Image 1 (tube, protein in one colour):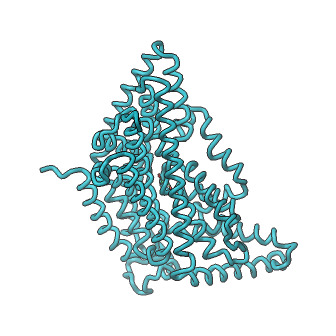
Image 2 (tube, rainbow, N blue to C red):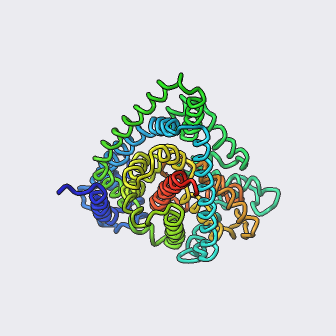
Image 3 (cartoon, rainbow, N blue to C red):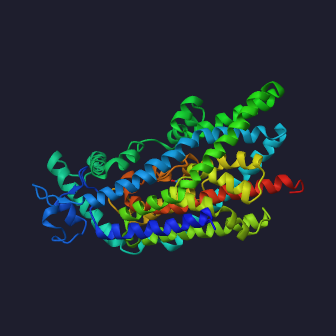
Length: 500
Ligand code: ASP
């Protein structure tokens, strides 16, 4: 008997973790040079015993060869990240365009398209609001930023600030505690942080001086009305979605003369779906490689360091999932168990790829084939939902920023005591950040700048949660696509039942 795809995927996930753990345990330094060498200092910083390498592993300068570890990661990344995610990305832009146009144009009338749209929108607003509220309530109750080894983080941070303080005094001859020097001191500190945090920090820092209005315009409005050809080549999902909706509505308004174009999109939709089914066939092995690489890089230690934070986000996501299952049961009139069975393939792919967009083809297939949602509703609501409706991301944004304020609020360069106004501001910006986040890995981390900046948390504090972000991204992406799938079920149910 041929194993079912999702069973194979779960088996491969287990093997991936089993391959990744010994790699994580066997080697500490994660950033070997391109030839696979690390310095003795990097070796020691990673907590490796000073004599835990053979003499032949040393080069002329005494650097240590961790080539085998490095090469294993390269191969895992090649299959998982470069080839598999690359193939999924290849199909994302055409898929979103074609599936939305085909979805909307398969609806018989304008009125119906509007009805589906409004129902989906109402569902997105309600579920995203519940998600953010839940996250905020949990993080304020659990207070993860005051638990665990948080004192060590505060002490480490204060020591860093003291080193920066000494360097600032030496370089400028100014006293950073005087008010007239404060702006210069903070800028100096940020620049110093930018230098030491690497490329991901740069991505965050480059957006740091923008106001919430600027971010709304730059991250939401402008991408939406961009040149559609540019959107397709840059995988600007918001732009593709907006253009696809306009194009489809125009086709419907034109009517019969637009028939050839509508037929072309319908045919293209079938073809794109077939390509997706082919990709699914290789997904288990790719997932094995992806997970092995993540576990090898981060190891189980990530749980120890930021365990409370992860626990709060994951608990929030689980409670929200239970709420969503209640919605699918009560409003969608579908048994939660049947729903879970129908969606688990998509869930596994979301977990491993950390991208709602990459999972989209599978979500569409699960929702239409396993859950019996009509293609017209699925093809319309799922691509829009994958980009705009991210319950997990919204929940996590609020938890993360409040967590960081709980830990670092008292630092001299932050100075925030949480008040209701902060929480309200975080609520609003977390929703915006989730809408603006692209459906790709780590997108929520980048848009978190919007939330942090609004509330006055310096963005260079965000890297403190980088280490566990990939892990949390797995959970939030899973609930993101779950929310989209339930949206499709609910809208389909309300569409099929005129009384509803
Ligand atoms: N990876 C998430 C998604 O694709 C977005 C995020 O980073 O929160 O749904």
